[in-house]
Length: 362
Ligand code: GTP
Image: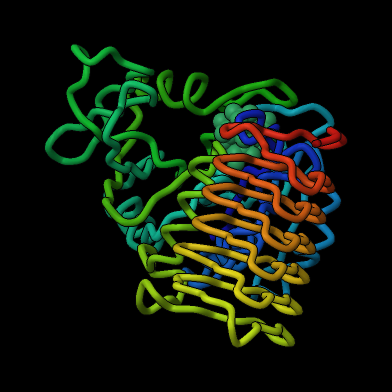
């Protein structure tokens, strides 16, 4: 079976992190997000993967290449203008066979058992099978109702609380028969959620649900992206090999001063330096080539690659993207800082700030 991963969205809600880095290349505990998705497919014996891209294609191609490093073979399709979720899959039709295939929203991290989902799809002789996940507040999502055999009976977009009959939402993984492609117009902006699923349901096609309460997180916003990093460090997913919550992992050629304090859980990449009396508190990721200066404090934060946090600076509950320099004695609290930003020494960023590329700070 082949899989199509949708990685062509603009990621507007993830800005400013997604301006120069495609969502699928964001480092999650120092590994590009897409690598987890591809490795999971490979583990479920899905060895041919089509990446449907529409912008910022080059960083993805440079990293993934032909896929052989991850045990799969990769084909790329590039949309000139974004075609929406279904339009993007239609655009891959020439690479699909006359049999069922998997579609994944490329911004979801999940432990979903794809093999079991495929088995259910075949057993039910479904036209489409949609994975479902429970959420606390279903009113901001699209609800999916099922009968007692798991057959989908209704799609309900962003319901009011009075309309809420279930907390199960579309989890962004689908198995579909090849002829579903016939219901999608070519080179047209088209979405599964609005343009494909409801009309096929109305026609009486067998569309089944595969509910699962396994780990599931979409990285649509900086808050959720940060939470995914925390969750992996706290061993909430079975895809990240952290054994206990205070675990500390240190990459090759990294230098940790004997008087530095690291509570864990923490992952420090390769070629990092952690200075004297520096403190890493709580769930912390430090990207490769980064330096944490003497007496600096980094708490509950995700630091990307080649970041320099100078002496005495304080960084809490923040995300700092590649190649930033955080000046000595500055304060970065509850902030999201995009790549290549320099914060002047002694400057206090207003909590809650999102700093865009090419913005002078300080
Ligand atoms: P926002 O702009 O913040 O809503 O993010 P997004 O553009 O990624 O949209 P959304 O979160 O709804 O997309 C879900 C998944 O589908 C993501 O993995 C997107 O990359 C992907 N996707 C969305 N639209 C397109 C598209 O037009 N083409 C392709 N190839 N993928 C898409």
